[in-house]
Length: 520
Image 1: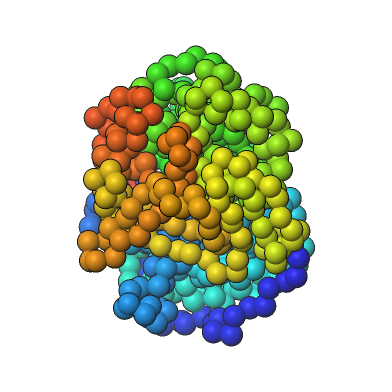
Image 2: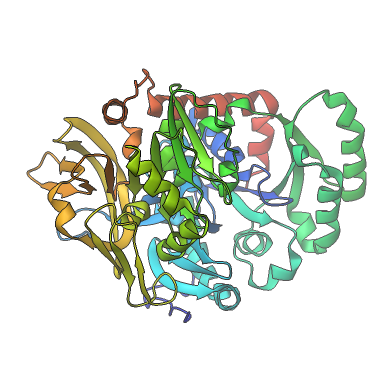
């Protein structure tokens, strides 16, 4: 896995122009303490107060990605804005601000493909694949681009909310850090530490972070917040006094448990660790949990339907016989996950499911797996070679170097429904199966194209469109096809309402005027 070269147009020094915005950085005492959700809630809360707010996360590691604008690139041949990709969490935070996602909100995105390597996306564009050790040495050279992106956001906003990554006290990474304390120093950011009390060990996490930081880094910390508290706060108040005594950092507030968190798209795969219960409530959809599952929020609208039971089938568990539909999700390493699917015996379960008359849907990489063969001649996702597919669609896919990034809001003329979503893939699929498309997309400006494929009996289907189930009418139409009744769910309103509820929750818990006063 060679180290990708940096592009020639990458900034070597940041564009340090006039800085209109104040900024405030949220770092965590560990991963998964709720940084992304807190920033999303603060984005919505301060936006409702009339401020122009922007989110920023220098480096994100996630296979959940979203389309973003690259407004700095020359327009495409049709005059359109060039697209790039960023982490899904930053796209949600941009939505909370009421703005279109930009590549500068997440200039470095790492998409894990193996245990020791990731695809590196720099300012929306794929650089290539890189082993972790080499990336660790390379990322110091990315700091000018990170700072350039940050300062670009500060010229268009009143407030930039900066999210750290993992733990802010990983001092062994300090020399090459681009997303925690070294970034805070370079951009002169005040830092708030966030700790998740639901995990336990909050006192040790905050005091330990203080002990590990250097004196200059400690001075950047303006206080700490406690997240996900349940119970009587007065019982924990003495602990806060002890924390402040040992660190000198004030407690800036406590956020209670937010019960509607599951109504917002999850950022990491911990959300997929739900056991199979075999309850069989309504339509049963089973989704094998692959090693490199990507863009799993595609399935959130289906799991939100009250008449649907969506199960993530964990490794070592079978796809149960009461399943109505199997969905194969996206993946960042398709051939690896196809082998993993076979290791778990899910290919046998899927074939048996089809023989019983069950339905199968493939989304992006899952669609590629449904074909006869999957080729990666250049080794872009792992070792070069080819892997037999499941053979449920008469198609062949070849992984190529060119990445397709398309944002869409179109009409599917086959169903008559609006379809929203995006394409984000490096594969090209061909074969006789394309003669029966899943979707026929009309952009309303004279361009109509077929997308995906459906088997001759109509029970196996797939395509490259992520987010296809977010559009209420299309989701209702599809549920009718598979024998289920859709509810009156307005999915986009559900997400907006959850963001508003999160902002309300934060407003009730924290002194937002005091937090804003700490920004600089």
